[in-house]
Length: 378
Image 1 (cartoon, rainbow, N blue to C red):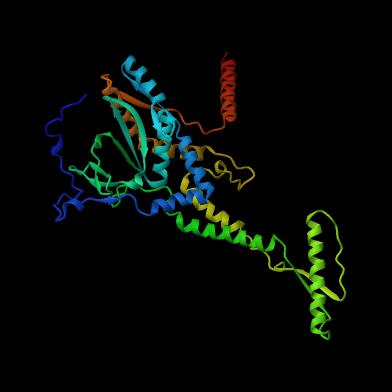
Image 2 (image 1 turned 90 degrees about the vertical axis):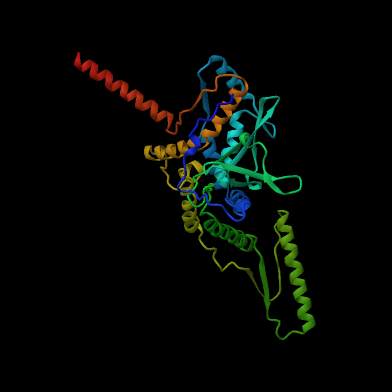
């Protein structure tokens, strides 16, 4: 269903975007989306499990939604479509698409998708790799045009721009194409990985014990005899260590003043608890999630307070508002192609982060208080 554009709607001029002609018009307004920072952000998720868990929990805590239509037939058809729409990679349902879309949005700072049309019907909704695309300012300062590589690797404008879905997370005036959740983390993450690597190296050095066997008193011996005695001691020590691996207790007997020390045993391993906690506090604060939701128990009585729940709820609602235009566009496109009333409203499910037991107790106490007040009045 197409609607005629109202006259005068395009007469508005945007004052904050430059519309001057560029000598090289093809280069004006380009902003590459496939810079190297995306690879760094994805490696952060692979290297630090806490960050990967944070993205997953933010996506899942955002919850689902209900699309409400004005027409009963449109409501029934849309519900069936949203439940069974193919999303690629063996996934079905709009929730699967929305999960991958939010994942890319949080990790890279932007997400792209596509509505697949076949036989004048909307058949599928798929996520795309945003790092393989470029964006250019369109004819209007409020429009963007997505460019992708053709069969020869040349970046060209994708032919069906109205079927593409594009969202930027927290765009800035100077960089209006999205900011990743991980911005500002690489520096701290590099320090954290150095600490973890050093811990592994130290435990490999000190945890896997190596011995130093020194036999004194051979200064006046013949060099050949001293060498032979050293070989015999080394052989007996090796046999004793080999038998200990098999659970057999074997004594080590040697002639002379023999000293056995652990190599590196005198050097203590640095305490990494304080610096690791300080860095993790910064990383977790950037995600907006309480630490215990990520498995970090820094306090014996840690639990989510009402203030933390309210702040996290506001963060989740902000993420929902960011992706809601994409969800609405999918629903309206499906209804329009089906010839149905395309008026639709997106209603998100309630976010419940409080302890259900505590809420039940609060309701019980409120009911008891109301009962006692009613009895006192009578």
